[in-house]
Length: 102
Image (tube, rainbow, N blue to C red):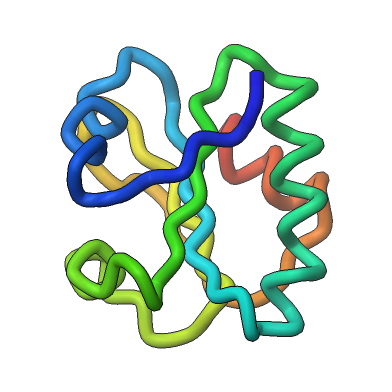
């Protein structure tokens, strides 16, 4: 499954998805975000049981604010519409998968 670009128009359908959701808050100009992005893409391709989305904080400041994003990249895991885990900074693939599974 490919990564979904998440914005305020489709966020409700993402939030109400029956799947565990991984959101990657990023900006195009952010070096660490560019390091995490291919890992997030890989997780999306290899794990169709998860809904994986990316939120551009420059384009969607309201969503970033709603999640309390103060540093990017920030990864948030949601289940049943609620954030269950969130972390800022780069993470290796296994740590991200552990966030999703845990």
